[in-house]
Length: 291
Image 1: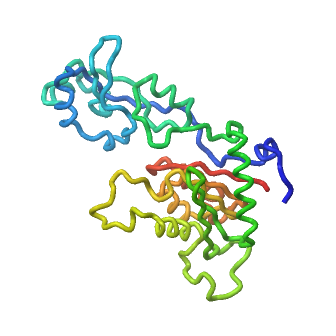
Image 2: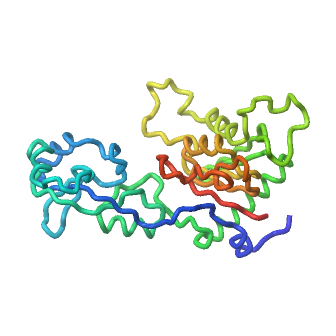
Image 3: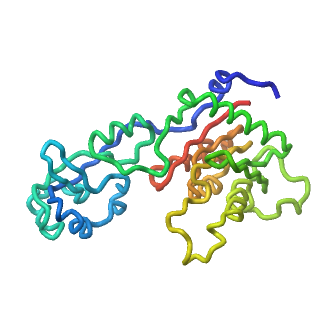
């Protein structure tokens, strides 16, 4: 395969998205609380996850007033009385409730992150947002994309996929049943017999089989353990179908790269966009690469 320059790789790599990456705001109630009462108040309030705002810091210091402020709840009624909000939450230990604008959706880029924390502090995520657009990728990242596709194609199986761990220390290859409508089919009826055993699904299974945490009894598993594909990059020849894209999402995939679009069954831009569906609780970036 002909070697490519970094700029050539960059120009042939495009992100598959319909999303405008901008700060999306929402309104919440915050109120003042004395330092000594902070822990008591926090125990009385519902989890931020219930409002879809688990990435917000629950409590922060207002440097202008030198007081602690706590996020009480999401604003649902614009006409709700601030005094009533203070008195009915935090066992009466909250005062001076007020409405403020905060980031309403987890920031997808460093630029949006900076704008979000200017409104209200955010919790440090396990995987901070990074510059994901091809024009902002490092030379090393771009070279890795081309090299990993070269590895994948060298296997000679048009339905193979390659999973690369976050630190690039582990590579998992997998094959499986091609989706009906793909460019070719298995030569033998018995080959890849299961209709659900698509390459990406088999990749998830392969990673699960090699995961030490899954070999332990469920009651003893480490609750802080990451998902199967947290931070992984997955490379495929064909754009995965909707089922596979959902499986990758549940496994918390980091990035997906593919060579051929699937306009019939594709779940990452070809037909549907599972990877960035706003109704789902995880998103990953998908890229189309022209070899």
